[in-house]
Length: 107
Image (tube, rainbow, N blue to C red; front, side, top):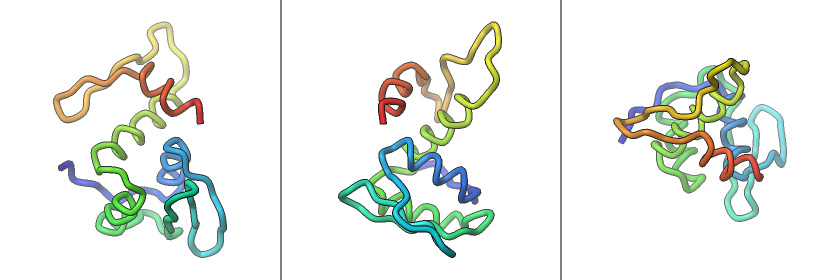
């Protein structure tokens, strides 16, 4: 399992939105749901690694899946270049941005 660093709560919200969650309520914490599960993200920068790991588990994702989605969200925000990123490496595996674009941009 990959070690999960502390993450900015805004980046976490964007990543969870890509996995099908939406914001239900905002205050000192951000409540999100996908219709089946409810998660609560504190507005802290960074969100502690242990707290974030618990939130990811409550969302029904593995740490590795969440990491891949976070990388996907970050790479899709990069400015376009003559050679856009189409693949990235994580845990000695190669991932295609096109596959993740089909999976996560439809939501």
